[in-house]
Length: 317
Image 1 (cartoon, rainbow, N blue to C red):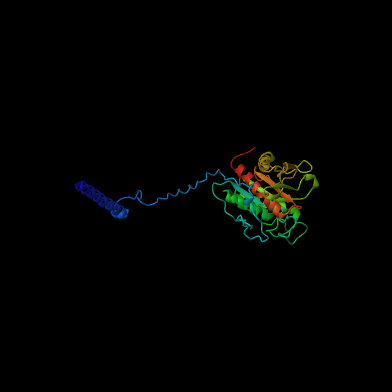
Image 2 (tube, rainbow, N blue to C red):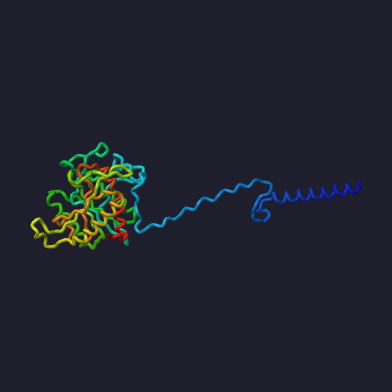
């Protein structure tokens, strides 16, 4: 019996020595053993989930701007150089901006450059005459600058001409903006869309002055197309391709109203020419009227930019 107990004690001692050796071996760093650490014994293992991979967005050509969420709408500050929460900076874009090769090309200009909106505490201005100012951060040029920013960010090539065409006489402004268009064409410039951006005059017959959006009140828009027939029917020697221009205007109108019902009034056909004979892709766009505020006019621009992106993507209606 005593001999058997001794044998058991020796076996237990041998097992204890082997266990100690195993623990000592595992305590040595993996690098020292020349092994890869796969797991750890006698310690608690915490497995942290791998962070979800960041998906690379597949953008349509061109990308679509979504104006619906309030976070994407610019929060306007009194100063034109203040940085709102969205990061948008309201500034006048130089007329010498360089188009990006291969992109959809847009020219934005303002024949009636000094058209302005109802002044507010945030956006006061000094009037040249009622609802007109030469300050480009308070008149319709500021609206064109914001539209330029949105389209450029979406990959559209935009040239924003901020030249004042009203001086010295408002009634001859179209002559001077035509000279600009002809000079650009002579210099080899061509565009897929020519936009003469205006501010309309208020009329009670035009219906509601604003539409409600998730971000607040927005001014309404209007696409105006000239047939070039003139008031007497004789018209101009060179008339616009008004049917092609109307197709573009109708496409933009439809796309705008799909995003926000009623934000764009029906396309208006007029007898004037409005310099729309220079190319079969011209449209005059009225952004709000003199009873709207600059804030309301700017609020409509993400919707217009979205519609132009659809046009650039070949979605003609």
